[in-house]
Length: 294
Image 1: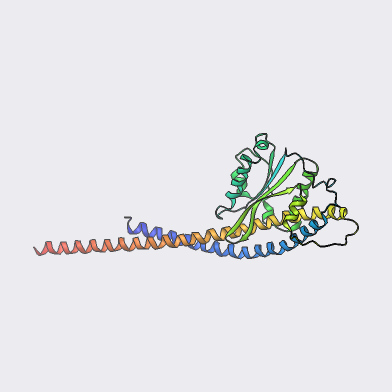
Image 2: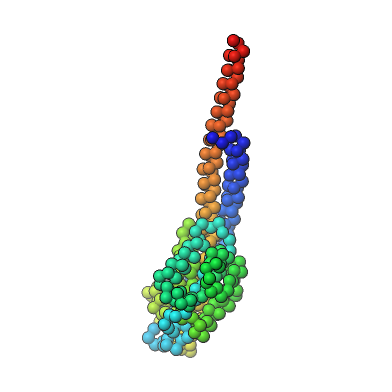
């Protein structure tokens, strides 16, 4: 059994750790509320935009000429990973990287073996985990995670759209954690481009409105699709950041509880060691007294 000084040192260390994790939990809870409000605010707008797009995407609209809907043979792929700039959030970042590596080994094994997959890594943690794997990383827009305004993310969406229109890539995927609640995030692989009218229809309700459209449906679709894509990417970033704070709050809550359990065990061991030391001293005193009496 460890001596009393060692146990006291460990108790002091665990108390300090518990204070830190408890403070981080409260900070993450405050940030989560703000991030959650941002996600909940953009979802109705995104859903209504997709609903309008779904309603006008019928047989009268020709998607063959739309540059964002041209399905091509998948030779060149761009993957956009959204993780976090900071750690201590459980498996939040590793799940994104693990899912990406799984896709490279299964669905897109041929393209990966031919080195036809490029990456954009938004988040220092995913970059740290992938920088030594000889992946072709185009850019690392880590600053977007700290500045989530639409005006900052829209240029990245425009760049992705230009990549696709210029046929630099045949498919663009966004991999991120979709926010559900503080304790639950859904790892999502979303096809950013090319768009599919059928996939858009799945995201919207079955109720269809009979819109009066001017000047014509084809023009409206051409205007709505870039707008919808920018909103889609913006929502993915908001979802990821809210998921990050939720994952960190949950991780720090568990760490605080674990520190409390360790602290109780250490205090129990300390009391046992102290009692044993006192008993030993009493026995020594009694033994010495008996020796003197003889």
